View 1 (cartoon, helix red, strand yellow):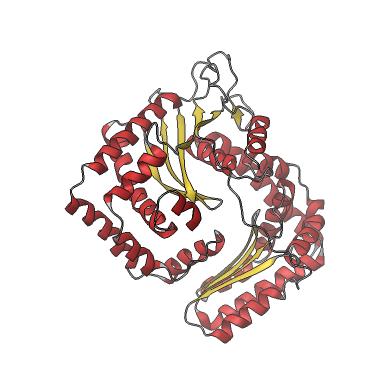
View 2: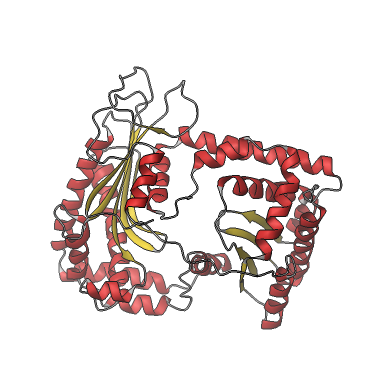
Length: 461
């Protein structure tokens, strides 16, 4: 069985609250090390994790004892909230030490991530820019908040967690060899962790609608002597020698809101399922084409990735490249744009037989029976966590996919991706190599947090 309880917060938490909640849940899991080992021997596992959207309690393994394991976890969470200072430990001193250690580890991981992974940093800031929430969490604010925590903050974290869970919407998912009674008992046990107190449904996440044309976000990799914090490009800055040559770019082309029939029909589609099926096939074709062209043939770098992404309910085609060849992100963008034009020609050149083979292959893949319960749970939990909640849609998606024509793929590319596309709304998140000279900014390029906040306000966020 796999059983998950998500307490979806009525409001997104700020960086300080998320740092406290994550540190508290980490300390709580430390207090459960002995129980976790016993459960592992019995073929079970459990966890409690906090994020900006909510707190997730999970148990999986053999169904005979899974209910007992979850009851134990729920009781420990409830007791930790009520005990106020111990974070699940027998004494407050041990709880405070564990809380402080988890906060220190969280701060270190956040700060390290700004230095070690250029492509991920560019993609992460692109997603934050597309989130209409002005308080969208970023790695710097979370790391700074975690670094400022101490053991004495454990009581505040416990109070915040209890209040947030009590006003949350509870979403429960159960899969496996259990009946309805088991699932209802699981839901009751979860709800009893924090009895409801004026639960407020949280509005769905909203994405920023990019303006027509290009939006540019200018970041820079850290130099060896820089403090570990996201660095924006500074115009006119002199170049530094002997720095890491890695640069990256993330190009995002917005397509439309997932499942929005009205918008899809306004764009000339039969309905949203038709457009979304075409976008799914486009993603598969783009993934293979970009890797072959940009990595295998052009050998731009060791990291090339393309495909479909859904951020705050809005679908986008994306392509990310990281390189240490000496090319900057502007040169990488030119290569990505050239690939997009060539990809359009590649699709147009498919014979009917070759195109049918690709779409029917993907449809057959969708219909394959999952090999493990974890695969089923992962697929279904994606529907819950994204808010889409289309659980029995695999057969429908496969059937719709069979109706996709080559012209549908070309329509997506011609409408949203290729240069001069009528509805093209593109975001270019550039990460310049450490020490690279800060060139003159493109008109409207976003080069600070204030720029990002002003851009979101200008787009109605």
